[in-house]
Length: 91
Image 1 (tube, rainbow, N blue to C red):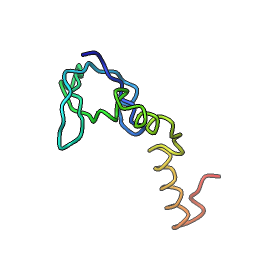
Image 2 (cartoon, rainbow, N blue to C red; image 1 turned 30 degrees about the vertical axis):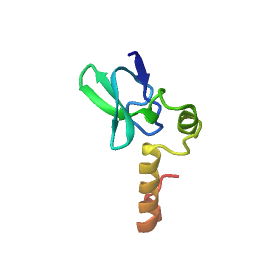
Image 3 (tube, rainbow, N blue to C red; image 1 turned 90 degrees about the horizontal axis):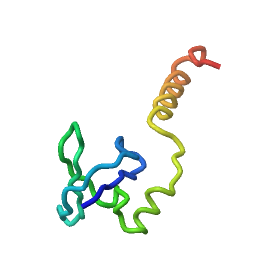
Image 4 (spheres, rainbow, N blue to C red; image 1 turned 135 degrees about the vertical axis):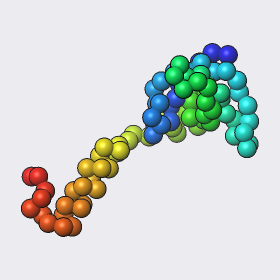
């Protein structure tokens, strides 16, 4: 059936391409069964891949990330340090 690339901006497999085994509908959501070399097969919503309808794909890929998980951790540490003692903050 071809392959699909994960385009969801927050998915840990974003940017990776997988073989599509089948397409099915699960609870009303179009889902792709994908093949991973180590994990075996797994399901992913079609809209989270480059198989998404054009309007869904545009909204998923054109949103710039303002902060990632590492930035959120750093922000939480900064807020915690400011709340407890300002001398702990690296300047």
